[in-house]
Length: 343
Image (cartoon, rainbow, N blue to C red; front, top):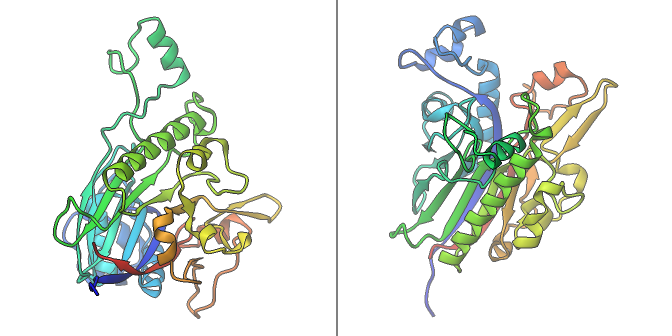
């Protein structure tokens, strides 16, 4: 009988909501005892640092979850991720981030626990075209007018990025798992050129699927996971129109669906209404292929709820004050993979 090395891995996905931690000098842990006003004065960056209490509460939640691989959205670059790991996570992780295309400088990145029995490699798709122009740009192109920067532009790129994390034992070209992490176009449309960001988000989703299919073809026996903030309902029930290609062109499935978690327990984001009503929605997803289904640890998938100083879970936010008091406006999604072959 041939022995195959395996590993157990705990994953966490979180949109950390504007995790900017930029300092003018190298901070010490004494900074964690500062009042908020003094905390903010540690930086002269145009980006305001995330409030100290919120950052501490995110770290508290992540330490409680104790994941091996943390997948993060809305991180203010590698400097912020390094500072978060240094000041708040006891340097237990290796920060891994490539800065993308975001106009707000919010990126996707990873914290990977030190000492795991494998290596990792990160690649970016930030320069990849998504085969999309806004309606007014398509009209300009039809008439031969410049679209962007005084030249004819044929397509936009990802709003942020789709990064590829390859996990491997010895050869980076022979990974045993690949993770695609993204943050698709938001629903904001300040220029009123793409209502709810629908067309741009759909184009980004389709290009994400292309990348997934290319990896599937190159590594047919390697599980490819797709994760991130999708900014809409990409679940199999009531799927928003822009995400339907996920189910017609791939065999990917939401890990919470595979785990058969009750629908009301899947909300990763709450929209607060004027009537003190909160609508819970899942807009953060981890999609796994059939290759990974047998390795999903039973009853390990859940959405983590933030806790107060007494260890009690916070209630669902029913007004903006309650929502703004949370560490992030998104909740962590957690699951475990067990006995995964490292080959």
